[in-house]
Image (cartoon, rainbow, N blue to C red; front, side):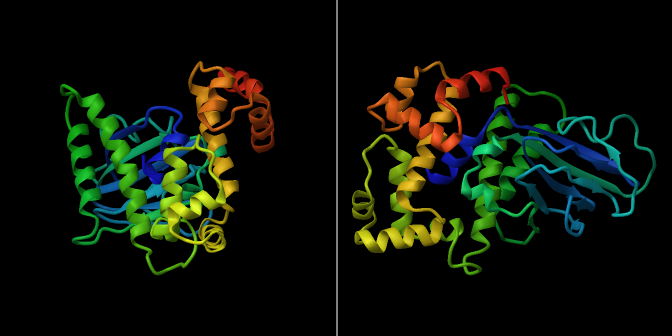
Length: 306
């Protein structure tokens, strides 16, 4: 898998959800904070996204708003409209007949359940609100995914609809993140957006993600990147904010945490899959990274799923 896909997969806790909603002004809905991320796509009309901190964001037709950390935002037809609490982040925003014949807003809304405690730096570095304004000719793949998702959610159930919606939601998340990073090629010289565009660093990242169990060293990663050891270590640290071996350990422990949570593999098998021949060395590294022993982590996450 590529780095972006891998990062999302490692964080996923459950099935994403989506709905197509039509509202008529006046309306305003506030969402509770949750363990995950959410999005809104405006299909018709307009509205305002009201974050926990910062100024309201005006959204128009074709705009995408992605919230990588659901801190409890609100959306409304106007910033001054009184807000009511949503029953849940997955429930329709409005049920029954519309309360008025005011201006109409139609949206696609969705929620992703993600483990924010092990948020990959690719997502952790995003702002609380990612706003992708509609621009003619920009991000055709993202627009295509939105159109397909809207069609699947429009009307009654169809054969294969559940599988199609889940697949499209996964694709939509990838396209949203890709669009955000693609729109900022010259804004910063460092950070994960720059790392994904740097061939040398990206080659090393692909090696770590494809084969985390290999006995990687700074020298072997540098050889993969085509740079000297010192030049590679410096560039990797400058762009990702982490030394190569520190990132390797972080990624290994992220994979291990997912395996302990989602599978019945023994601790010894998990250790082997992330490059440790010694179960003791693995347990020590895991506790140093996550603050708890592997067995206790498994017991705790089994008792508190998601």
